[in-house]
Length: 112
Image 1 (spheres, one colour):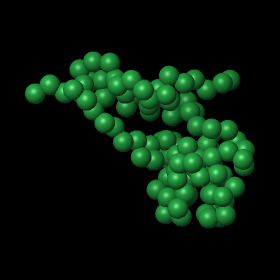
Image 2 (tube, helix red, strand yellow; image 1 turned 180 degrees about the vertical axis):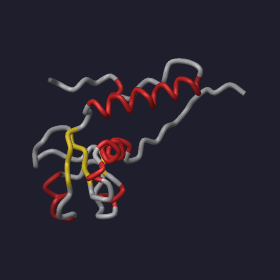
Image 3 (cartoon, one colour; image 1 turned 120 degrees about the horizontal axis):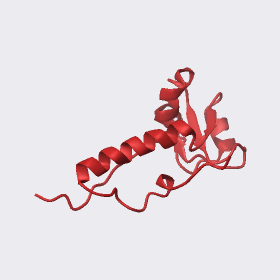
Image 4 (cartoon, one colour; image 1 turned 120 degrees about the vertical axis):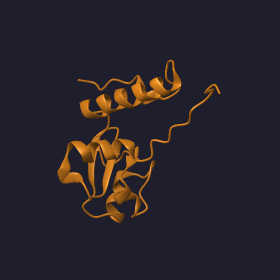
């Protein structure tokens, strides 16, 4: 049987990467954000944050009302990028060719 498509659910993926790299964040509500600002929204939330109703699109200011002490980190750190490359490498290996197109984060680079 030929693999024609592959759906990968990266639920809380970037938050989990940050918790792996920074053990002090494990077990704490965590939001991954595009920029360090109270006016932006969460682009990923840890399972601990989701328990407070925080998810993709939740404004940081609103997240702080629901989960006191929530920690936020800016997306696409070097660790995120490295983990994403490893994940895509695994997907390409399973698929037998280039990874699926359409995941914007795969090609984005963090500004210096």
